[in-house]
Amino acid sequence: MTLLVGPKDGFSEALAYRLDLKFIELGLRTFPDGELCPRVLVKDVGEVAGKDVVFVCRIRVGGRDPNEYLVNYLLSLMNLKFMGVRRVKAVMPYFIYSRQDDVFRPGEPLSAKFVASLIEGAGADEFYTVTAHLHRRRSIGECFEKAKAFNASGIKALASWVKGSYELKDPFILSPDAEAVTWAEEFSRIVEASEYDALIKERDLATGAIKTMEKAFRLRGRDLIIVDDIVSTGGTMINAVSIARKHEPRRIFCCFVHPILADGALEKIRSLKVDDIIATDTIPSEVSKVSVVELLAETLKKEGKLI
Ligand code: R5P
Image 1 (cartoon, helix red, strand yellow):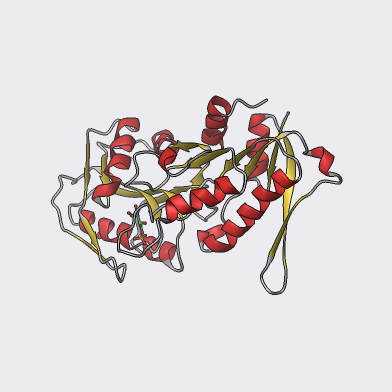
Image 2: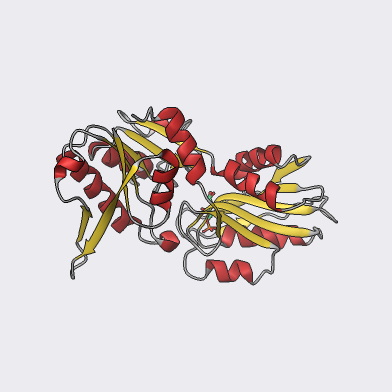
C-alpha cells in the first residue's frame, strides 16, 4: 500500500487525490532559535510502518529559503524511514542547488550532486523533479548513485497551457541565453511555432552580473514567447524583453518553470508591461498559473509502480 505525505498546501492533497492515495499531513514546528521539527501527523507510527510513501514538499513562496527547506526535507525523509516506511518516492518539484551542476571555479562544491547524495542518504529510494537545471550533466541520473531519478518536463506543462489559453499569431520562441535553447525548442514544437532562437548571455562568475548581447529578429506583428527554466533576480528575463521589444513584436509573453522571483523581480518584470507572465507551481507564486500536479502524477504512475 502507498500513502502520500506532504504539507497541507493544496498541492500535496491534489497529487494524492490524482493518484488515489491516502493523504497524511506533514506539520512543521519552528523553534524560537530557528530549528525545525517536521512531524508526520499520525496518531501511531503503525499507520505508515511497512508501507510505501510518496513524499512531496515544495519550497515556500518565493523559493528564498533553500537551506531551511533542505533541512526540513532531509529530516522528513530520515524520519519516514525511522518510522518504518518501506520505500520512499521523494518528490521535489524544484530541485534546489541544481544550478551549481559543475565546479565553475576551483574550490567550489558540486552542489547538485552533493544535495542529491544527501537526499538519497536520507532515505529516498526514488526522486522526482520538474525541469532540473542540469546543463552540464547528461541526465539527472548522473547526480544520484542509488536512487532512481526522474526529471519531468515543466516546459511541456507551460507550453500546453499557453497553447490552450491564447490564440497565438505566428509565434516566435526565444530563450534568454544559449543554455535555455533546448526549452525554446521543446516549447516551439508544442505550440507549433515555425521559429525559435536564443540570445547570448555572459555571466561574471565572481559577481554574478550578466550581460546579454543584442541580436536582430524578425518579430514585427508576431507573438513573442520568452522561455526559461528559472527566474530569480529577473535580470536575464528583463534583458531579453528589452532587446526583443526593439523588434516590435505584437505581444510578449514571459514563461518560466520555476518562479523563484527574488525580492522585487516580479515587480520589475511587471513594470515592462508584457502581455502575460506565466510560471508553474513548482514554487508557489502570484504567477503560478500552470500546475505540474498532473505531470507529476503521470510520471509517478508510469515510473513509480505504485502499489
Ligand atoms: C540560468 O542559466 C538560468 O537558466 C536562468 O536564466 C537564471 O537562473 C535566471 O536568473 P536571473 O533571473 O537571476 O537572471
